Every structure is written in structure tokens, then in C-alpha cells.
Length: 283
Image (cartoon, rainbow, N blue to C red; front, side, top):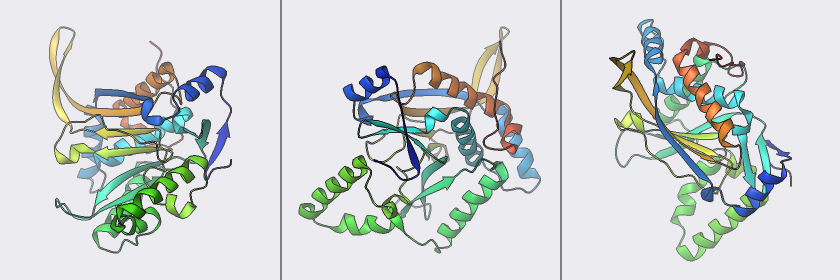
């Protein structure tokens, strides 16, 4: 079955048996929650801000994740109906509040990261969407447009209807209009817990949609480490990453994590193309 914005991928026997033994994404959660040195990224963003440029840590982190996906394309894969697929584009999704209030409406946003995007174009893409949202000019469509309608239905209608939509998603026949703004139909999901002055968390994923990972980004805090026997304070940010172990093995995932660390340690890379090839230094 052909799927929207994706292509079928052939896999080896071991991977296929793993999928058959654990057909649900929520049976395959693997978590990592580790502090990453973002000292250089903080300095990079601060310098850009002093020049009057509107660049935030979230812009940098979102692009760093996208660049990691471009360099480790298996992260752009997902399992549906016991088959492996790969997204034909790279996109990152998140939820944004219309206002910074407890009961403020939330809207799902998806940022398509083109191969030639960089920190400036990504900042503009995100900034334009957030501005439209906060100016109350955001036009609800796709999944955003039907949430309130579905949520208002009585249980006797809503529950079987949601079950039917989940079935159509599994079989690859969910209407494109319902995938358009649904954060679960992206390469990866991020949640900016740091903006709430909180550390990262282990966030659950779902079997619905095509996102094989969700990353909770914590607050940037001072941390302490020992270098050459001497204590050293540095800026650390925890990335709580939940990914589907069926899309790639541990060796592949660990190297992906190392690439993310390397990008944030060398933030000038964020000024280059999103699909720029990154080679880790040999030790």
C-alpha cells in the first residue's frame, strides 16, 4: 500500500521478525535522557541576538535534530502495517500555545525542513507561523480543524470513529487532509519543556501517525564536570529522546546522538545547509 509522502523500504529478516514480534510502536520505546554540552550554542545564539537577529535556542535545537535526521536517514523511517517506510521529506512537529495561559488553546504545527534550509530560514519559518498564531490569524485546517468537532461528539459516536481513523492510518488510507497539520505525521516530534523552566522528561509516543521519535528538550542549566582533574562549569541541556528501536539498531542510534552532540558543540554548522554531510572526528 502506497502512503502519502513516504516510500516502502525493504528490510532484512531480523528486522522483519522484530516488527512481527513487536508490531506496536509503543512496545518498542527506547529512551535516552542525557545532558548535552550546549555552551558553544548558547554563545552562538547570544552573539546573533546582540546583532538584532531573532534566533532562539529552540530554532537551533530543532534544526540540529533535522540535520541529524538528514545525516542518519534511518531516523526518518517508520513502521506501519508490519512494513517499513521512509519519509520523502524531513519535518519536525510541535504544539504551540496561542497565549501563555493555563487554559489557552493549543495548536499543532509542522515545520518542513528543506535540504537548503539553515538557522536563518528555519527561524523565519517558525517565527512566521507563531506570529500568525499569536495575531489570531491562524487558519485551522487539517487535523487542527476537526479536533474540536471530534472532541464534542458523544462517546457512542466518537470512540468507534476514532478507532476507524486509527485503522485507516494503519492501512495507509487516512485522508491527506487529516494528516496535514497533525503533529504525529512528521519525521519527529519535539516538545520544549525548557521554556517552562523544567528539565527534560521521558515522553510517551503513540502508535498513531508516522513519527518514530519524540524529543523533550529541557532547560539550559549550569552543570559541573571534571576536566584534567579540575572542576569546570558548562551549559548543559538534557534531551529526553524516545525512539522506535525497530527503525535502526543501537549502534546506528548512538552515532546519531553523537552527531547531534557534535552539531551543538559546533553551532556554525547551523549556518550551513540542513542536508550538509557531517563527519565525526576520528579519535
